[in-house]
Image 1 (cartoon, helix red, strand yellow):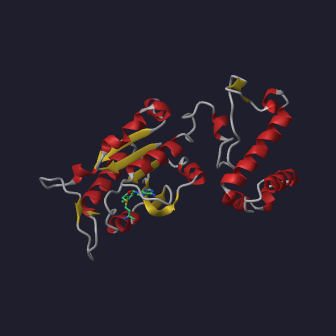
Image 2: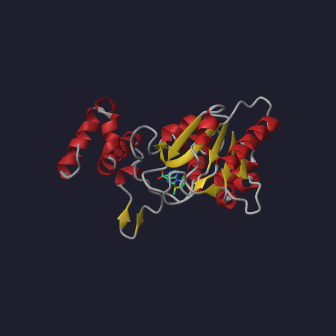
Image 3: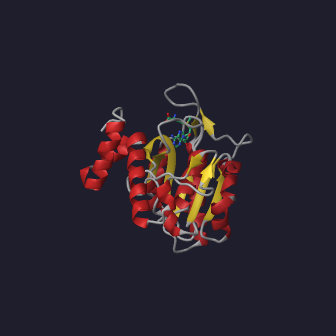
Length: 261
Ligand code: SAM
């Protein structure tokens, strides 16, 4: 998978040299290119922003360096791999569609992604209009809050996407039983010692009874999801739960009447 990131702070992306993603780059599973937007300016101050038309606070990123940077990414990608089509351009921003595990799964199947890290009040809208003439463009939000720039969002998105690329995470099974993979949060996990500072590991996990362990884990997932993310349970709907699940939730709600349906 090829990834191109355009930013005015290339150093912000340095953590992508570490850990599993760094190893995936060295193993050539991930081909990451970080581009400095200021390399596509032509004035002495390497200016990338200007005041907003219509007035108001803050600055807006000018379209010219973005246009040149995106042209460069397209040309560089095509030069490296003549069979490459075009990248899917992902633009982080608080007004984008929410980034989810399902979206990460879809994006992990794509051969080429490009990310445009905005700063200030964002990027001149015409950059997207122009890019859409050549590429798929998706505006993506990390959550309902405002960051200073797109770099932190790109770090999170690249990590979530890249770990789903086959070979990046050694044990592919560990990717299946995770929060958000099937509409529930993950169960609590424990390791040795069996008792620590007076806290024992739940007995069932020491029983060696696979059926009982599986049921306990499912129950814990349901309880945790009901407590922390009732919206996820609602989205699963009646059909996503069986009779045993409903019974667990009924008991949980009886114990914790404050938890909404
Ligand atoms: N004026 C913009 C608005 O209200 O929608 C916010 C701009 S924000 C200060 C600057 C940059 O941070 C954005 O262009 C985007 O790259 C990034 N950013 C901020 N919040 C984000 C979020 N929730 N998800 C993804 N990126 C975000």
